[in-house]
Length: 262
Image 1 (cartoon, rainbow, N blue to C red):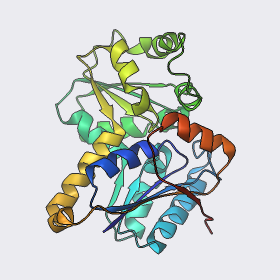
Image 2: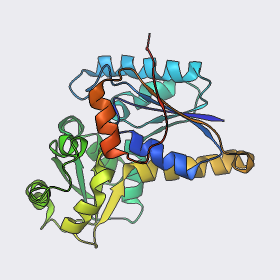
Image 3: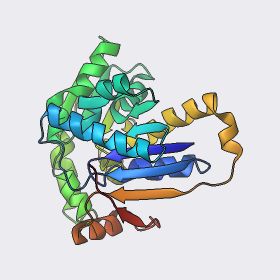
Image 4: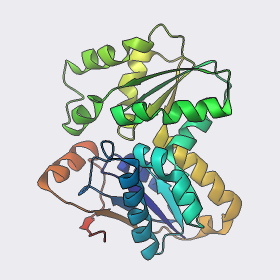
């Protein structure tokens, strides 16, 4: 069985990495639509079209399960994709919300890019599942470029973490959702600032957990086969992305292939 994962860029490689570790006996294809990023500034109509394009390409490669590793596509296009394709489809927002609500929290925080927070996708889904949860959300757009430039170890980085997260410090959060696939890469830094008592909801980990449970329940025999192949496809392969990938994923040993989406 082949699993297809798509994202607007390379942040979703955190999801790819987690799924690859958890499901070694499944073939996995990652599609990063780097030629058309960022998705966050585009309209729903455009994101829907891009998402359909991505799924069509993954289906043409015989993928039988789709993972939406993009928060924007998850918020805008999950419903469309589920109605259009008779395939199991997993998205980062649903997985993150389910994980956050699992322990019946009273107060939940959400951080993400500006587009994700503006869409209110996490808030709406949390409220639809529990009217008793208080939600605080904040965009932290500076985290992504700092992660991509490999500046996490710089002395001033802890100050940037503090400036962006101090909004939550006295909110008595039970859980904090990391609503961007880049953010798991700085989970340790966020943990150090927020403290050990707050559950950090890692979208990469949670969607992997949801997918693994589904596969174990429905395809247990697939877990007994040999280790399967992994593929990384990008729609644009500039020198910039090569540098970024090496900075973020130093142990990512897979070759990258350039592909066109029609």
